[in-house]
Image (tube, rainbow, N blue to C red; front, side, top):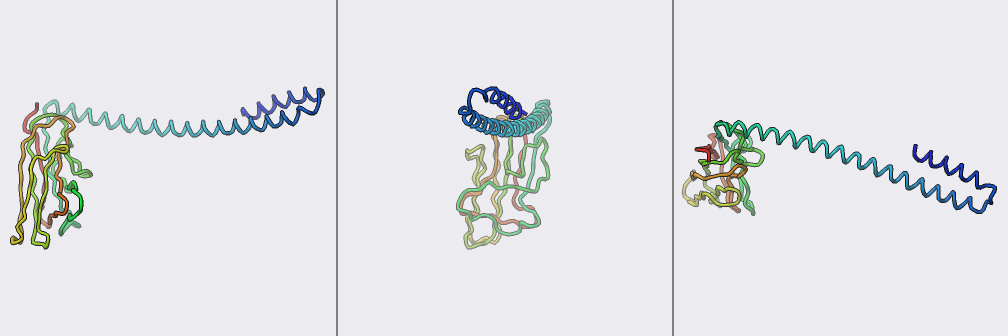
Length: 219
């Protein structure tokens, strides 16, 4: 629409100048062509910006929904609701040895039996404290005889070591290591179990590898 109006206006201007001489006509036509190209470019840019704005609006709505959910959960927890979780590693497709990687890796306990307060995430393997307070955490690592028999894992708060589990006995056919920690957390702190580099663990029916925790008292 803007291009059509511009062409009509310039066309009328050119008609008025026709009697003054034909020498200026080619220059004005060139200007019209240039302006048409610029208008089309601006229209394309406006459409692109409109698309970006719609995408940002959608993202903002998603974030607002997530914030509202967290605020509701925190309000419930601050009113005295309990916090507790219990998860194990094993699923039907997870029998056997796991690990022996060159870097430390967070263990994702996928079988969630209890998650009161929704603090634990099976997607990340981490527990995020919904409220500040004193928490109790427990994890068990299991191994079996192997040519590389070290079972080694660390319970961490954010990136700080809390407890260390190690079983390095090659003579035991089946073995396990368990640790318990009591720690003070602020809302938003994360706690997780990290399998150390070049170590492994074994799982089979019976939930041999587990991670759990609960809120002991609020700050």
